[in-house]
Length: 322
Image (cartoon, rainbow, N blue to C red; front, top):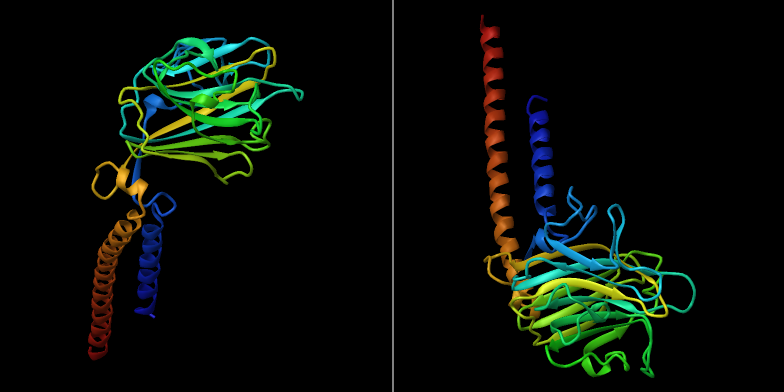
C-alpha cells in the first residue's frame, strides 16, 4: 500500500498535466498566431472617462450608448454617421471581426452601412455616409435595392476605390463591384450578426458572415491578388434616406496575424494548404519533448517512492532485530 498510493497519485498528476498540455490552443488556428490590436478594436463602453475615445473619431449623427452599441444611423430619415480610427492599420496580415445589427420596423427600410480601409478618413459623404471617390477598400452592406434586377437584397459587396472613380449609386454599385453575395436574413436576425474579414497581403481578402445560425459562418467572397493600401484607416459609416433603419456596431476585434512557428508573416500559410504539414511536424516535436519531460518526472517520483519504501522496510527490520 505504501507503494501503490504514491504511484497512483503520480499517474493522476502526470495524466492531468498531459491533458492540460495537449488541450492548449488546439481550438485556435494551428499555424497562425493572432495579436490583438487595441488601436483598431471597439467594445463597450467605447469611450474613455472624458467621453472621448483615444483611438477613434466619430461624427455626423452617430450616437454612442456606452453599454450597448454605436449607432451610426438611426431609424429616422436622412441620417448619416461615421466612426474612424485615428491611426492607420499597418499590419501586413490581419483579421477583423465586426458584430453589427441592422434592425427596424416595417417592410420598407434602407439604406445600409459600410466598412472602410482607405487613405481618407473621417469625411462625411454620399456613399453610405462616407466620402465618394475613395482610395482603398470599401465593403457595403446594402439593404435597399435601387436598380439591380436579378439581385437579392440585402447585398454585401466589396469595392476597390482608385481615388477617381465615383460610386455607381443608381445601380447599387454594380460598376464598382469586385465581389459580393446576397445575405437575405441579415436584417432583424435572431442571432448576433457578424462579419469576419481576413486579409493576407497582396494575396487574398476573404469575408465570412454569421447571420443564419450562431457559430455557423457562410463565405461571402474570397478575392485573390487583392491589395489594401499600406497606409489605410479603418472606419464604419451608415446612412438613411427617405427610408430608414437602425445601423449599430456592437464590437470590433482586430488581430494582427503572423506565422506562429517562425514569427514571420503568415501569407503563405493562409493562402495555401501547406500550413497543416508544418503544424503536424511542430506538434510531434512538442509532443515528444513534453512526453519525455513527464516520463522523467514519473521516473524521478518512482525513485523517491522506492527509496522511501526501502527505508521504511529497513527501519522495520532494525526494530525486529532489537
